[in-house]
Amino acid sequence: MWNKVLYEVLADILNKRCKPTLTHCFLRLLQNKGKLRWLFTQNVDALERCVGINPSKLIECHGTFSTASCFKCKQEVSISLVRECVLKKQIPIHCPNCDSPLVKPDCVLFGEDLPAKYYQAAKKQIYDIDLLLVIGTSLSVKPVSNVLFIFQTSNILAILSISLLTPLKQYL
Ligand SMILES: [Zn+2]
Image (cartoon, rainbow, N blue to C red; front, top):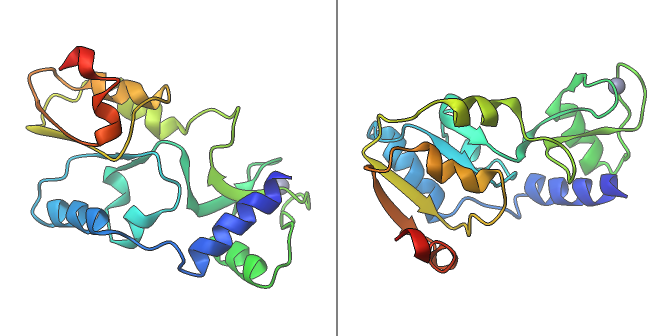
């Protein structure tokens, strides 16, 4: 059942078994120096938020574990309540609004559409960047793999992902 898997991952995050890496800190450094325009991430662990990336710059393409809602009625549910229930192992978590046992973190499950914020960002023609960094992804999952192509081709592209080099060889 998806509830069990989601709550196990959430418990890992809450128990701090997932920690920001030097790469997350590098992204925060870029932000501190005013050099971070957008940050698209496919991760749902919210580690970008943990290091203080401004949510307005953050496009969490597959959602996030930092907020939660009811799968049935879409009511937002306090992440503090979810955290408390997960740590006490009181799962599944019932919705305070409709009482269905379908409260889940706001990550995108298989078959669900991506968050509206992703489509809003992807529709914009983002030309005012000097450098595009692609870090740690194979960009093999659509539609997120299309993010590369919303940027003006004359922008400098730096690829920091070994697995990306093979499928993109035709574009280099
Ligand atoms: Zn509900």
